[in-house]
Image (cartoon, rainbow, N blue to C red):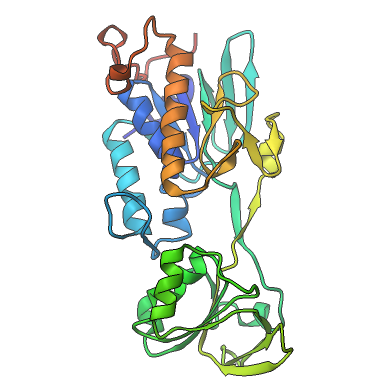
Length: 347
């Protein structure tokens, strides 16, 4: 659904940069408020669930015992579409600029220029690139048995798999193939960084855990065949016969573009207040890219921040005469639905 080429000629109540869980949650609530809403995403709608972890079982989202990342991501997208949000995929935002005279935010992408009364930045961590272990054989054997992220269950059947990492993603990767493969899990530190439930599952499974162990070299003739590892305490090395290597030590975030937008940053994140305002009037932020004291990065908190950002955008754009809890779920009748029509032009 969409307004086609005329979309660049309307003034949106809110334009959301990023169509991951935070951005899509914000869209759900702006559309509940009957605010015209456009989402732009550099990749595909669904965020990390769709692009980085499609085969990852998500265990920490309420109402699901577990759900696959791609399925949960699709649910977010389907709901936003159902509510009437407009979503553009593979459209990269390069600049946002406040126009004080017109009281608007001007947004430039690789495909068009837009005007919005409010903007919500929900880009996650920006562009993602897997962290490398920078060991011999990594570059040469990438795609030849060495990969980054969650193993494919079908491709793992009957194989000897080495999972590298100690956080949630590494533990989940090991657990996801424990019933179909011979799994070894190594981590450089002396304890796991993942959720306690995952650690307990690892201990109760047939997975071979090795703490304080680092990779020395990955060997193979055209494909992964062996990995040399070293115990950091004893300095003892071992040669492990391995078919597949799954590296899960996080992602590097590229926030170069966002740094040019004039937003106050703390490290690689945008500083927000307790209702998701940034230092620029009319520009809000939520999800992994946003930070504030006490921030706890979880999927569910990204969603709640999206809802908060949407509510703040509503108050800023609509300036309601009164504001009650009931209005969270239905816009006042006199405001109506401000979804723009193709004939609408900037004021």
